[in-house]
Amino acid sequence: MSLSLYEFSIPVLLRGLSNLSSLLDKGAAYAAAKKFDSIVLVQARLYPDMHPLSRQVQIACDTAKGGAARLAGLEIPKHEDNEVTLADLKQRIAKTVDFLATVTAEKMNDAEGRSIEIKTPNRTFKFTARAYVTDFVLPNFYFHETVTYALLRHNGVEVGKADFLGAIG
Amino acid sequence: MSLSLYEFSIPVLLRGLSNLSSLLDKGAAYAAAKKFDSIVLVQARLYPDMHPLSRQVQIACDTAKGGAARLAGLEIPKHEDNEVTLADLKQRIAKTVDFLATVTAEKMNDAEGRSIEIKTPNRTFKFTARAYVTDFVLPNFYFHETVTYALLRHNGVEVGKADFLGAIG
Image (cartoon, rainbow over all chains, first blue to last red; front, top):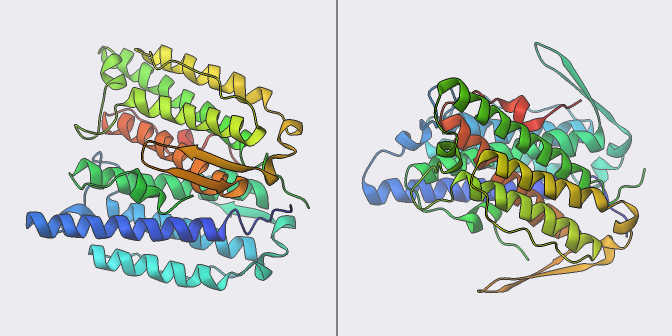
């Protein structure tokens, strides 16, 4: 059986984005039931100098978007970080899903031979495409999806592992 | 370039386990510097009915151990859940690393054709080996590594994304 980098990236990220969006639905329903403004959840943090939920969702989306674009050799679409509400964040996820859906297996045919560079103010990271997926894109994506989950759970939203994993097996 | 399920599982989990162990070191150093008993961190929770840090580490380890064993068609080693201190949890991680190190690429040669069943009290999950890695093992592992990180960060330990990802690029 032959495996492709596509299988380990695009469908995996699409599944994660869908689960992330469902987590936000649970947050919105909880705020409505408890009659508080759901912006409290959007702005929630686990520690004063840690990013709030809004930024966790934005980074999860940007990790998926940048990952898909770099693996396929496409320009990374720009999405402004201007979300204020849970509905805005769901839209941000939807835009990201729309982009990832255009990155077909065919567009990733050359991905495995690609080398990926990421420049940050402090240093430049150089990855093989495989290492970019396993060491950067997936752990980063799951990190921000999980912190979003943890922020909701910490604030009383009744989310469970099944919401995080989505439909499996 | 041909990809193997081994590359997307064993080295990835070994890297994650190493990062998890380093996160616990930072927790221990913080407790020592602030002169509090680090068992407070071991027992920390983000919500009263959420698992404490100790259980997060145990489940991360069991996800890695069960994942490696099932993919290679080996019996899953039993590790008792009896850890009390951060040092105990580091030992648990080390035992898990020792087991994963025995699961070589050669032992995973047949993994891709395997189907994986996981029985829980409520239902049985059936996965292809690839879906088991992408939809179950990796998201679960990163979930529990991230919640461990979040618990430390929430309690003031100065861990950052670089600690979570480990040496990259």
